[in-house]
Image: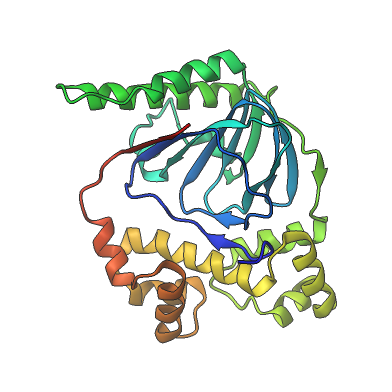
Length: 292
């Protein structure tokens, strides 16, 4: 698959959280990708460059990348021979279900109520300690699974406290997205049920449509149509989880017909909307993988 093509990566098999610990060489020119859940990428040893929605960040031990739902990202390259990382996938529903009025565990993924991604720096030893505790798989004794979840929640509390301290954000090494492209992306995200054709967007922002198309592909590494379609499909999954009714969802995401929606959904996710709804109703599990 060409590096310029963005793909949706959805390896989660649970609607809670999953933990991975890796020390593998990063393949360069890997495709950009999205998730319909949060990703927490923790750097433990070595360094590398991470791309996140138009910006590149140099990451070192103690760097934590908090990737919001649907944000475009990938590891560009590693800068050292060893690049050890741990990362977690966690759903919005899981974090909200474990939040309280005084402790919102999704706060690290928002800014004044608006969804955001962040790159922060925390104490490397503190981060390594949390990951070491999560590396210990839960036993089969009574309460072991709950105690393991408690360790994960402690990590989330620590990361949220780091964000609230407001002194830990890392500035990007380079900003790859001009303001115009950023404005277009924000508009798309807020108006998925409206006309987002190239002509409509060019008229909305008073720019030449060919210039817009060329600049979007140049800076985002994905063409405008594909970006919009992916955003709509990810939104449809979010709404399907809430409503369970594909015929109520497709027009809310900007699809002109139900048939077109079905075709795009199956091509992107490998299943029909009905199968997706059924799979989300099945009992969940927590998966642990360690590839050291």
